[in-house]
Image (cartoon, rainbow, N blue to C red; front, side, top):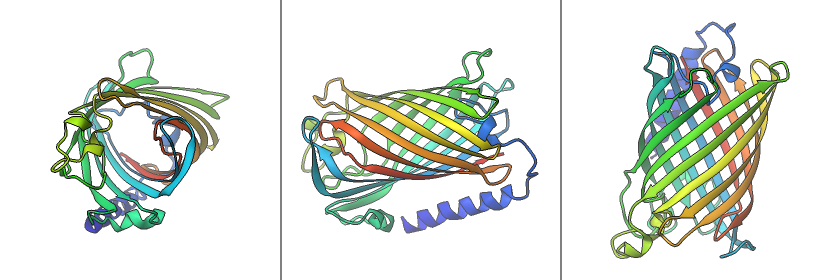
Length: 302
């Protein structure tokens, strides 16, 4: 896993070097290429997004919070898309994720050791997903959706939790509107995700990880809103809110949470921009963690 993290860093640096050769006077992609905007034919969009979620609080079976030993969850999500249609209304791509988790009160940065000790640390490549982006209405260019099918590729073994053990079909709907002379933007997102697979009670406790099947036979429904302000063409700051529901469809388990956050983006070069954000889960239900998420993303568009 250390070799993998080194490779990701090297790729990021190579994109930076490529981007610095571009013409710096072009329009910022932060303003032009929102998540609702699709690529032109032949364009490429590559994004490395890294999130560290850490928690020392969790709700009980209801909404009452209590202290727990620190748990940490790191996720690297790499997205690669390209435009394939002459009218810039269809993009195709692939997503893969790398995760590292640690438990039992370890420090938040312990995830970056990428260990697998069978007791309180586990890491690995977890999911791969083919994906498609579509702008369905030609007259509404700032409305689009992305549909992805995630396959779990990590080893099924009892013990330490790594990721959900399911086939996950997720469709995200995006819409944004710019106003205030181009200084403000509202962006909204609604996701519909379905987890397919055997339930926890059907898994063999001796050979399979029952805890990784907690979300199977359920629908995940987060709804998010972002309000952005652009101090300049190359920078933006934003605040966001998210309400998410895990709806039981046969596994006898459901959850919900409310998250608030803030962040910013900066256009480093014509082709490369950097994003950083912070999120805090402020309310939850049914063994929902009440932790914080620290995220850094790097995006190359060319």
